[in-house]
Image 1 (cartoon, rainbow, N blue to C red):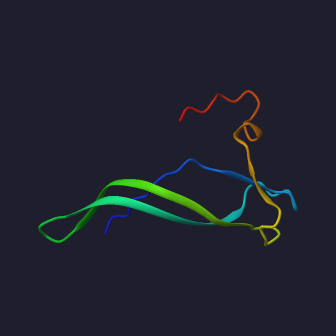
Image 2: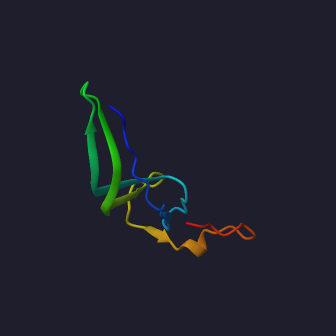
Length: 88
C-alpha cells in the first residue's frame, strides 16, 4: 500500500537549557482528509491529501531529555546572513 506524506511548513526549535538546535522528538496530532481510490484489483491509492489540522503535542530535546526549556525560533532568527529569502 503506498504511503502519502502530507508536508507542513517546518518549525525550528532551540533548547535554552543546553543550546541544542538540531535534535528534537516532536509528537504531533493531525487530521487529514484524502480521496481513497481502490483499483479493480483491490490496490489502494491515496490521492489529494489535505491537512485539516495539526497540533504539536510535545517537543523534547534529544540532548538533555526534557522539553522544559524548548522554544520555537522565529523565522528571522534562524535565517543565515546573506542567504536568499525562502519563497513558500
